[in-house]
Length: 156
Image (cartoon, helix red, strand yellow):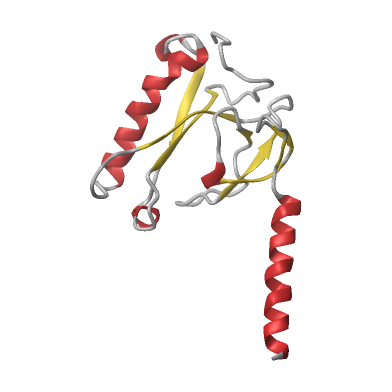
């Protein structure tokens, strides 16, 4: 019976740690204090830095308020409507093309004229099997300069 108490304490500890290290949002949902941004809780307008290490799958990213220098901003989130996982190349292509469709409406300038570039996050075969259909479109400066403030409507 004592082992159950240890497990419950450990689970509660991980939950408290996650809550303490996660991003803080204001009433509108904007990030007001940096921390770990869950990849499955990313919203349009969220700003984040590149991870310190890259992996095939992203579970969290360093979220920051957009008023602070940051590497990326989420500008679109949508679900793909395919009956089965099409493979990494095809899902990557679909994500890229759909993200391009949202670009001008967010930035206020067409993609080819902009100094910004895009990076889509899309389901892997593993996450697809768990019901993941979400694509997150992130925007960044092609010259790897930090962004400050939102690029929404910036025309850059």
